[in-house]
Image 1 (cartoon, one colour):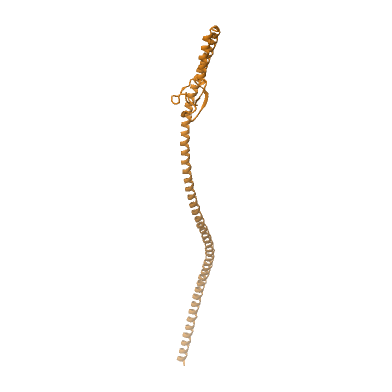
Image 2: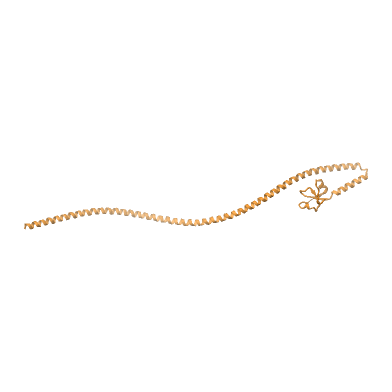
Length: 237
């Protein structure tokens, strides 16, 4: 009996010891699980914060993506407008080039025409200078002829006065007077008919002379001679 009791007690002790060990192990497991749970809870909270931060960043990225998309759309619109403006600009450049070529051609024509006009003007200027020189020479000749004509007229007046005095002193000689009147009348008749001069020449001509093509001025032969003109060798007036 005692042995059975001892065995029974030993079994009870072993059973209690096993229970205590199990309890201790359970407690340890609970403590360990609690620590693990706390650790996992902290990790979960950290992960939740990271997830929240990532969600915020994702939201910001979406907003930035939306803004970038808007900018891309605006850029596409500006690009399309630029392409249209480029096309219009190229058309305007082509039109300006064509207009420039036309203006250049017209300018060259005007320059050629102006050069021709300048050449013609220079020709007229040279001709004018030549005519002006001739005019000055003729004017000098005319002035000299006027002076000579004046001198001749004075001489004629003196001769007429001398002749009048001679006629008065010889009034008793009828025969000589008749001869003198006849010679004077014959001389006046010889120089009284009309001849023709030109604006530039120094000869007097008949009305049909070919030298009178450009100008034809009528005067008496006596007046022409008094002005210093001489007879034309072609028409012999």
